[in-house]
Length: 253
Ligand SMILES: N[C@@H](CCC(=O)N[C@@H](CS)C(=O)NCC(=O)O)C(=O)O
Image (cartoon, rainbow, N blue to C red; front, side):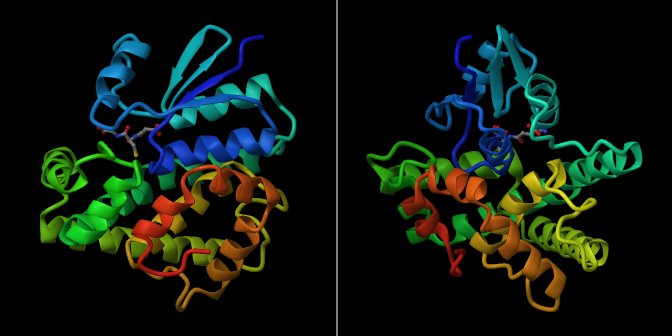
């Protein structure tokens, strides 16, 4: 079997979801990170026009796009350890939460994080210098171009959009706090696809200076628990810790 190839954007939480899933299942794979900016063309070419976003996963001759479909393909190919609960009701809930994070929390967290980073030129330059976004040489010159791209693509310069994003993020975290209760994981008593995604959304929020923990004790304890899992630590350590440090406005460890 040829090794699966993950086409990723390092800083992307959707890519992180797949990195966590691959580590969790112990799947040996290769990672490719084309320079951001070139990613759209690469994604369109690799997916034969089906997707302009990353992640993509090449697996057994098929290119899967969209992180939800990629997790489904991984689950089918490597059922153990499972990311989907076996109980149908629990499974439906895990998939509903995954969808909620994908649509209602993730894009807003991304928009808010970029909004904060773009406002703060030294942080933006440090991030570009880390090689995580844009060319690592000429970071100072590249910063306005990267900011311009983000503004066009995600509307990151509007204060109204940032305010709306913040409200969505807070509502999402409040929902999670309410749903967690005393549970160790989001659904049932095992790590699932829902946990694989939420962990990164929480880190991204912290990069942007948001503090999901205050006033949310269940969420704070949960985050610590999930991030201390060895496979999660490995997935996080594998991607430029310097870049993470460059954008962190709060300790994210
Ligand atoms: N629904 C997609 C969203 C993927 C997505 O938005 N990826 C972003 C990275 S966070 C991307 O490739 N953005 C590049 C762009 O939109 O130009 C998924 O779950 O995979």
